[in-house]
Length: 424
Image (cartoon, rainbow, N blue to C red):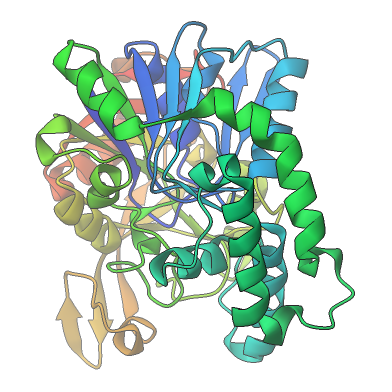
């Protein structure tokens, strides 16, 4: 592995990045998260223990690894405390191993209230938000009204900035009996977290730069997926941050030379949560079968995921804009019982053949997938650890993907557990 590696989702999130980061973290000194918030859920299974993390980098499970949450992440301070308590219950000592950027913006209770109100007001145009307050927190950040970790350590400034929220958000907060609208209560609860954040707050950009100069290896942990990128994803059915490689750099305060390799995580089929275009979606028994076998329910929301065949058009888009060097294919075992497997190799729009994703949502909503069919392998791949032990049809499926995307396959996941993995 290169010294500094970025792991990014190449679909609509939920690709299995948690397991891949957990595997690669063993070879890194530092694991850093750069964007998103508690709307992302990473699941790691070690032995019989299942860890679901939303803010804290997956590498925290490895003893001795240092983890950072960068300035590009919007941090729910109360949610972070809950995750830390969860780790403590599981016997994971994070003392001196987890740090957050003092420049990171906070997701506060009123952001969640606003999120719910706005989603309800959208009606039939709802975008499927997780209701975690992520979008409203990023709106405040861009509008320069946000409250940052550093503000926690200046109580007068914090109170003034909270009171300002009452003025600019009166349409949501004024007269509300929802306790999330209670600015005084929010201030009091934040004061209880000040000692914790004083231990965690750092200049993450500076510390990571020094670590690189000192020869440390860094694993950059992406959240969500490329097709949810606020600029290059299925906007407006997207998240509020840059989920692509550029978000790693701006979200941690690093220059482009910091990343030496990009690993794209690709589920062996495709899923997405929430509203928005999904060309290969299967609203039939096949889609239900994928969901049931793959246990496709959101780690953050519990919502059933929409399922469909692998979409190579979307993956070409992801590989190109992220500069993906290699891919990790996850959940191959979910396809074990399918006698026929389809791969979307192009789109058709009004009689025109497309090989790339149209960024105009009006067009993407109306494309029809063009499929290539392959024979399934009808054999159990669960727990296989050697590529040559896969059936010929399974190997052909993987090679087809790699050849089309012009990348090499680095990892194949054949189950949820750490050891159920092929390292190619």
